[in-house]
Structure formats: structure tokens, C-alpha cells
Image (cartoon, rainbow, N blue to C red; front, side, top):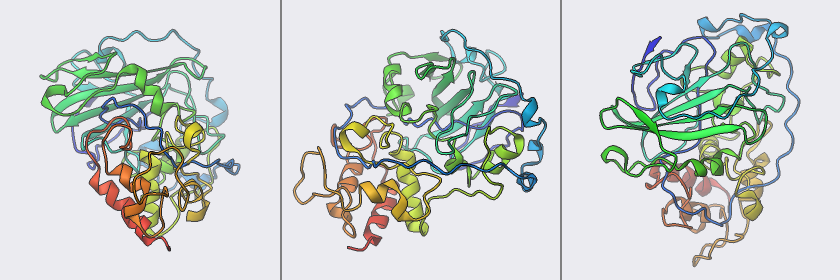
Length: 383
């Protein structure tokens, strides 16, 4: 068992080497505003190239407690489907060792994605609990799917003030066989109760937990319903298991080449901006996302993107006219090369007005650092 510790998003905690990675459920602090019917950045995405088998060299430079312990041929089948869970308290979910919720259970591993979702400056910790002996389906390296029984947890807090913990759990083989919801902590931090309708201004903060019915709006944009645990997000993650660690452990059904290093293309300014848009916008703005029918814009990256011009952001946003967004004087393009002030992406990222602000859910506070990252990229584009 591991004592539960709290820290800011940039602090790493020692993580055990059993079956756990970490959740990157892409939901922030969730204010319920109606989804905007505006221009997004989505273009059809080509299939990723077939992944090669990992070589023995994949075990080098791997966390010492992640040496392979099971041959791929001997890993048993995934667990069978089970009834949809009926949770009331967080301690029932398997995240903790007991009802005191003071220590994380064995088989639960913390992780951190390389590019994080803005959640109104809340601190976050993420964990995954993968059923023993199972593998993640990585036949499509851009869209991982997880075996039945996988659980992803995400704690939101302000310092030691615990606010909510979210859970995504797969309990069956169907596309809708996922339990998603938020458990809201009491002021004492001694209990967290499932809130089907969400909660507002938790424990004296501006932080809101989402209603359960809102969860699919973001999570259904990915086949595996998990938004931050992927080849792109683990390639250079600052803490927790890396893509190389996961390969060495035998967790992937179809591992990438041993030297695979998936990172957004371009120089630091370009790569950082594309990574930010991927993590904060790409779950809705992609061909599987909720915004695709109205916008056909793609902000999601692919492992096969070799140059900035290969990405959906360049192909479907740079220099592209708006679709449905209510026209603002002087703003006619999604991204106006060299001119952030007339780019709809910057205008909307800088607002939290209903049907104008982006993201339209899960945030009340503008991410000024994120706006700056994308502004610098747009300013660098040739007019």
C-alpha cells in the first residue's frame, strides 16, 4: 500500500511498478455552459502506419521495477463483462486500500501526461488500474483502447483541499459500456460521494464537478474514452511511466519500434502550441469528436505527423474561413497567419462567455499561459 500524498501538477511522486499508468481524463473544473456551435479545427485524419514489434533494446533506460515479467503469448484474456457499477462512495471503487482512503491500493499507478489539460489552475493527480495480465489494444497507435475492468482516476485539489475525484471505468465490450462520474469530497477530506448532478463551488472554491450526463461530451471523442494516456502523451512525460516503460512491461498489444519518440513536429514554439491544442481541444475537435459534424476541424495530433504542415491544425485551421461562429468584426479566419489578434482561435480561447468561450465546458478562468503559447505560434506563421 502507498500513503496518499498531495502535490502540485509538476511534482512527481514515486510510483510502483505493478500494473498502473495514469489517467488523463480530459475534463477540467466543469462549469456547465452549452457547447458552442463554432468553428473548430478538424480535418480528416489518415490512418497511422503499422507499428513494428518492439526489439529487446526496448528494455534499456526503463524504470528498474518495470522489467518484463510476462511473455506476450502467456498473458491471459481480458476479464469478462460485468454489470454497470452502482457506486455511492469513492472508497468502493478500488482506488484505496480501505474506507479511510489514506493509502492508494496496490496495482494502482500514478502518471502524468506530457501535455496537460487546463483545469482553472487546480492541482491534479492521475492513476490507472489495469486488470492484472491484460494488455492495452494498440493496433491503432493513435487510439488506444483498454481492456474491460480498467479504471482511471483523477483527483482535483487546491493544495491539501481535496475537491473531487473522477472515475472512468470500462465494464463491458460495447462503445457505451463505460462508467463515468465525479465523487465530491467533504470539507474535512474524509469522504467523497458520487454526485450524479455534479456540484458547484466545491469547498469554498470556484471549482465545479460535472454532471454525469456531461462526461461523454468530451470522452466520446476517443475510442478508448481516455484522453491523456497515449503514445503521444507518454513519449516524453515528465514523471511516471513513459512509452518505453510501457513497452518493456508488455502492456501494449502492438508495441511501436524500440526507438519510437512521438512528439509534435516543429521547433519549440510550434511543437508546444500543437501539443497544447492536442490536449485541450483535440478530444472534441477530431473526426470522432462532438464538434466534428459542425466544424470539420482537427486539433488532434497523430503519431505519423512528421512536419507541422502534416497536422490537422495546419490543414483545417491555418488560413481557413469560419463556419458557424457568429462573426466578430475583423475576425474572419480560424487562424490568421502572423496575426493572432484577428484569429478566431485566440478570440475564443480568451473568453469564457457562453457560446463564445473555448473550451465551452469545464472552465471558468482563461488560461493566459495557454493563450500566450498559441499566440506566439500564430505570430510566427508567415503571412
